[in-house]
Length: 103
Image 1 (cartoon, one colour):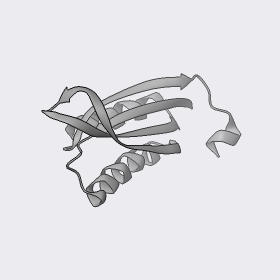
Image 2 (tube, helix red, strand yellow):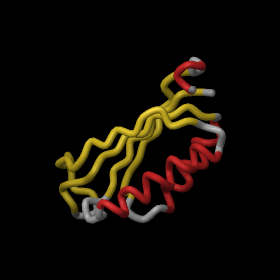
Image 3 (spheres, one colour):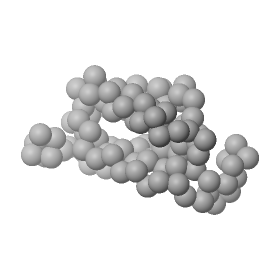
């Protein structure tokens, strides 16, 4: 398995419950695709460098996970169709994940 990171920009209008529901859905996709979530890093509300959807603030969340490459495609497909997610970027961190990290 390879190690990936996805940074997501969420709408500031989402409530705490909607935010948790979106993250549960995304982590569930990684689990279904035989992957493992290593870290969910919520950066909270931040000012944006430029307006996105006429908003100047947004909520950032960073997901770090180990999974097969096809799982990243499925995760990104779901991110694109999810309401409340404005932008995202996925990056491959390592070719192979050590077994103790994925455990």
